[in-house]
Length: 586
Image 1: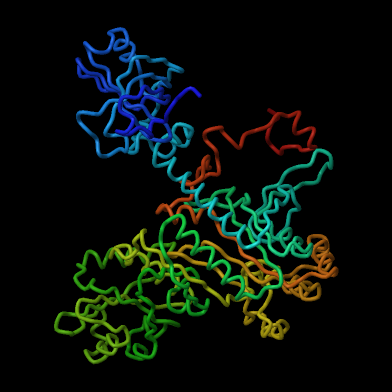
Image 2: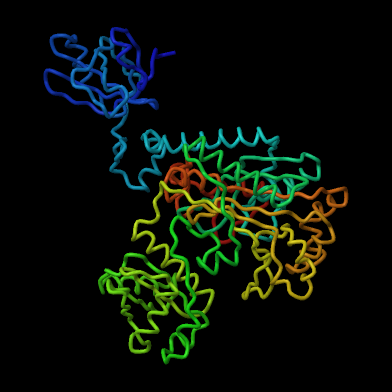
């Protein structure tokens, strides 16, 4: 080894020892008679000291030539530090250097490689290998490592077998767009990169593996945002001979284990909420339950009073922002503008304040008597100081808009604390959803999701009423995992494909291998997949999964560090039998 110790290791117990350290120059402070160098590696920072009259002058002169990020090796003696630094673990000691070797000089970095940097997102992504030297970024990846290790520990202890599935697979039409890979040996044919190992894990259950897991890369060619990347990681799991209850219990134990081992947070039993209740009371199938502010429907109380907006609305619904009655007119106008944003889509906002004397003052007072408004207050369990915020319109759009307003108020009132965790299961999803554009049913989860056994009889006459044997785990308003009991019977799977608009030939071409496997003794089975990057960002208190991926893509799906994607040579295209339309050969 080129070193005897790391830069985060030495303490007062090491005083008097001669040590060898290697690392990078973090910063240099030259006070004339004294010179200090902060030396950094992944383990910490150690201060190096050079003193005129004690340190040989040639060594001081050599130290003064050092720049930020020079890679150096020093030999020196550990001494007790006169002016201690309680902000770092090595702050009680320093090294009096008597040998310095520059292992590699460095150009001046394009941004400060410190906890608080002056580099913007684009610049840091271009020089990601430098950004990864910063302590906060490194700690994010160390958290990811601990999460991965704790995941394997739990699943290993519950008899799961880790099995790798193929990366080059068959393209399927359901879900997001596939990334496709041309085959040189099979001209005109393409592989696809897997959006998930769904069919393979089901085949492993047919194979008798009983319990499978994989921490696996998945790929989706879709528009990006902060919590999406074209390639991402799932914790993918499947179990045989189980009911939904078995899976919920197993993976509730898993999430409790992760919080305990990685965060030191103890969770009680996770509550469960039906999809219908989630939409009714929160307007979202991934409700943030760190705070209450549940929806209150007002139709019976507000109709036929002469206020056309309410009279014509399919749904009048609101929330109680407790303690917000002091909001100014300017703040209320800001909230009105917020709900009118195109991406939210409300046409306006009605509010009512509960005064200190218990009276209620509303923006629609001329249509409603004080007695009417008191009935509103009772419906909201309102108290003096509360602010009632009400939207009206189409049921689905209004609930969606109110969900956004609820989250905004939760943010403004400080109710969305990143250090508080509120996980729950959402269950009883609809099996299907109707798409107006394609004029057909789509699977809400995926085509292999089993209906609730008691709802199978609805498949011919009322498919929209069928509930899925499906479940999502939600933490703090983020869907971190989802799964279902799978169809394991060929006849039912064929019925599902027909319902989703597949012809017999299409279903056979795309999934014939799976349906054929079902005829060789497929066990009842089900599973779940967790978004590993999302779990990491949630545990780390970040909004973006990019912070927990070593080399992420930007919002255009580009790796600006290596400049990918990029054109390929014409000879490669010729080998692949591909002709680029309106794009010249490189």
